[in-house]
Amino acid sequence: MTQNPLAAYKETRIRTAGPGQLVVMLYEEAVKQCDRAVDFLDTDLKKKPANIEKVNQAICKVQDIVTELMASLDFEAGGDIARDLFSLYVYFNRELTEANIAKDVGRVRAIRAMLAELSSAWAVAATKAQGSGDERRSGVNIAG
Image 1: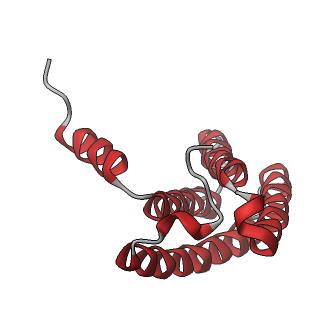
Image 2 (image 1 turned 180 degrees about the vertical axis):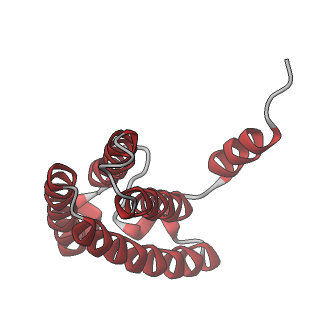
């Protein structure tokens, strides 16, 4: 049985990534799912009611990712930064729940913008940590 080459590449990329890179990948996927939700919300949901379920699925995926990011925080090593991120993630999940209920594209766009900004910041931090060999001190423990 031949595995899909793209799936194999993605699996290898995840297995070989450092903790900081994994966080960046989670943020990137969350941004991608927000974009999907926005695209579906921008359609006329009355004309395409099937898109309502697609919006729900995309937003739920973002919430799953945010929950994973919450679970990966290391409060001992991360201190105030980890606590602030935890509060931000709680806010993200609350806003996403409200956005999903109301089908509010503005809320999804706002969360998407914040996730994209965090993704950029983590990408810089992960690159610096990888360069210094100090990726473990990020305050995030992706292994849970």
